[in-house]
Image (tube, rainbow, N blue to C red; front, side):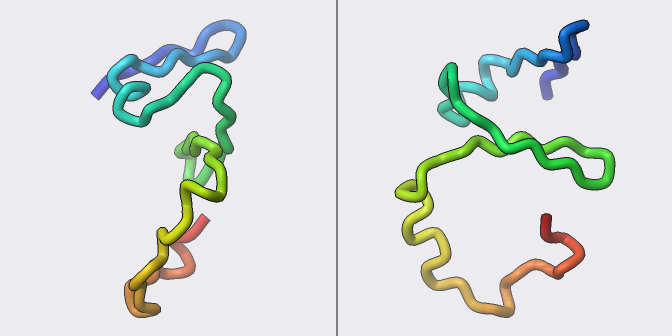
Length: 69
């Protein structure tokens, strides 16, 4: 696990290993979510990337409402 430091300008540098694993590129946009004191950075992707993501999902496999964002 890597750690990062928040700069005086409130900037973070993502570690190279994480950038490569997630195929992140300079200029990408992220949605910032906060839940229970934890910050989530979710890369914004085109709708084409999400095509077929829910194929075969059964309602019983959905998370509890309290666990959703």
